[in-house]
Image (cartoon, rainbow, N blue to C red; front, side, top):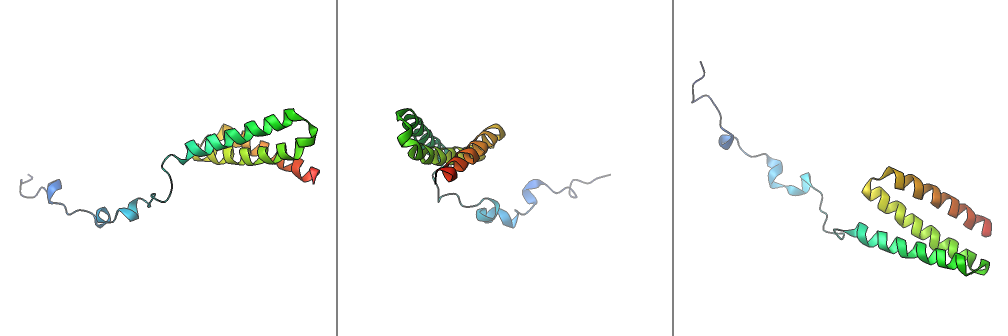
Length: 107
């Protein structure tokens, strides 16, 4: 038979020492913008669009097309890693590899 005096209630249990130190539980995330992925994805999209515009402008702008493209794709790779989207990670990583190879061939 259990007596009511033997039961420890949740109120009587002392708090964990970790509750007083939130930096141990959760890292400090005040050093970056909360929705940085929004800014990065738009910057990446603008760079990729500039790359496409340069590609359509003619072959004399090819090296600029490649450089804007590789930076835009690198930023999109970063966004896809933040989103943990495997399909986008693979697409952008492979695209980055192909564009970087083209840049090396142009040099």
